Structures are given as structure tokens and as C-alpha cells.
Image (cartoon, rainbow, N blue to C red):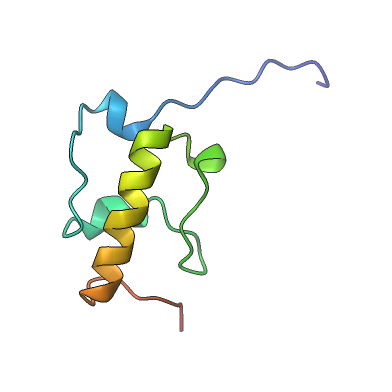
Length: 73
């Protein structure tokens, strides 16, 4: 079990050929948000660096436009 080979996670956006991440698509964005409404790190979600940056921008825009909450109540 100690020497188990971990399968590398693939970027969700690269696999599905998503070029632009839309801030209005909250269903997709919620997959990358933790239980405390924090953006999950790319190490946990498996997104590539380019898409992680676009994802963070999209989540922040959705929060400002009141499409997603800043915190969990």
C-alpha cells in the first residue's frame, strides 16, 4: 500500500476542450469550491495552471455578481 502508484488527475477543462470559463456557469464552478466556499487548490482538483487561474477569476466574478456566496451560512 505504501508504494501504490497514484494516478495523476487530469484537468477537467483540458479533457472537455473548454477554452473560456464562464462566471455565469455556477454549476461547473461549484465543483471546484470546498464546503466553506473556498476555491480548492489545483493539487486537489487536478486542474492545470492556466485553467486554475481562469477558474479563480471566474469564481471571484461570480461572487461579486452575487451568483455565488462568499461564505457558507
